[in-house]
Image 1: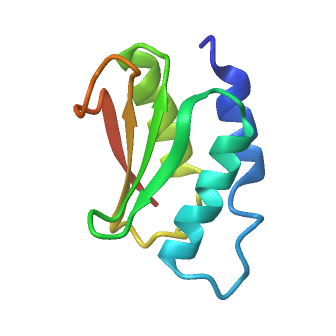
Image 2: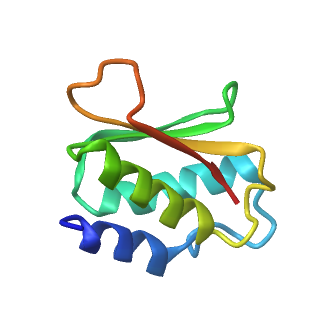
Length: 104
């Protein structure tokens, strides 16, 4: 995967920036800080409390996006209780995600 460094940073960082008492919204913003810090996103990560989603836009093909999504989603150690999702968009996909997955 050409974005191996991206997924490695995200998985290594986990949600270390979130306090132990953090809820899912705080965890979502902490995850965004980690994702933004990679420098790989096409635009700033966003959190939708209404949709219970973390949205990112990154230049990768759908197969890579699905792989990344699953790796990130499975690496979070239950911080989201399974009710949140990550949606990955391409800079060219408009408002249609190229991958989505539950956040553990």
